[in-house]
Image 1 (cartoon, rainbow, N blue to C red):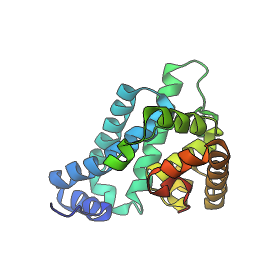
Image 2 (cartoon, helix red, strand yellow):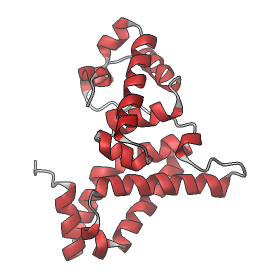
Image 3 (cartoon, rainbow, N blue to C red):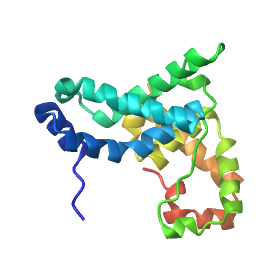
Length: 197
């Protein structure tokens, strides 16, 4: 299996050579996380898919300037957040104007057979526990624990401090630890849920 290129490498190949293969690889590397993030805001898989497609159209349109962007992952997450909020404002009369006002919905993605072994009943318990978190905690939890962003990157996307991200994640983990029964906590894959980044 070929090695996956880093986002920075793909960014440079797109910016300097208009490399369509690099563009496709970037799309495949980031699509799932961006789709999950947009869905948590707009709550429609189809709309989230369109939004992520629009984000990548925008990336291609500004490809010549991609070299100027310091952290492309943060940049595309921020664009996705903005496009998602813009969709809500266009579609709904009393739509939230900032991410803090959005009731986000976090999805849980199963990536390997061990994770798939968790029963639907346990998954429902985990989802309910996550949905009980305050909106900002849920979003921070998703960006850091599900999408793998660093604290600083999540802070940039959400326009909050890295300290706030750390504190929100600590609150989320503490609340989930209090809410989920001990046997369920042990079933969480790789203890990823309850480990800090």
